[in-house]
Length: 285
Image (cartoon, rainbow, N blue to C red; front, side, top):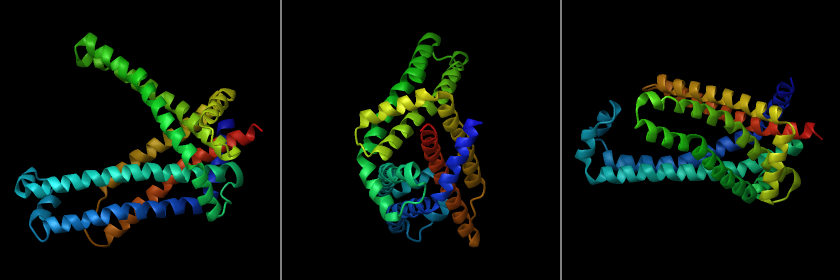
C-alpha cells in the first residue's frame, strides 16, 4: 500500500507539472527539426526528382548505393553524424531539464514559474551531469560483472553451444531486476542536490544510497512498477508506429499527432518517477 500511495502522489505531482513537460516537448521538437531540416535539404539535393525516391519507398535497395556512388557515402555520413548529434544533444538537454523537474518536484510540485524552472535547470546542470556520468560508469561495471563475465565464462566452457548459452538469460533477468536500484540511487542523489542546493556529487550519491537503505523495498518497488509500465508503453509504442504508418494524405498528420502524444506520455512517465522519489523523501520527514 505504501508503494501505491507514493506512486499516487508522484502521479499527481507529474500532472501538475504539465506546463514544464510541454516546454521540454517543444524544445525537443525544435532540436529535432534543427537536424532534420538540413538533412531533408541534403536528401533533396542528392535525389532531386530521380527514381531513387520511388525505389526507397518500396524498401531499402542495396543496388541504389552502388548507383549513387560517392553521394551515398556522404548521405551515410550525414545520417550518422545527425544521429550522434541528436543523441548527444538529447542527453545534455534532458540532463539540463532534469534539474528543473527535480527542483519542481522537491519544492513546489509543478508550481515553479518558467523563469525559475530554467534557472534551477541551469543551477543543477553540472552536478546532474556529473551524477549521470558516474552512474553510467557504475551501471557499466554492474553490467560487465552481471552479464559480461558470465557470457565470457559460458562461451569459454561450452565453446559457444546454443544449449549452454540459454543459461545466460538468467543473468539478463538478474541484470534487469537490479536496474531499479541504480535508477533510484541516481534519482535520490539528484533530488538531494535539488533540495539542498549543494553541488557536492559524492555527498549526493551517499545520500542516494542512504535513501535506498532506509526503505529499500518501497524505494525499489516504486521504481520497478514505473519501469514495468514504461517498458510496456515502449513496446506498445513500437507496435503502433510499426503497424500504422500511413502513406499519404491527412492520415500522415494524424499519425504525427499520435506519435507526439506518445512522446509526451513518455515524458510524463519520466517525471512521474522523479516525483515519486521526491514524494518518498518528503514522506520520511
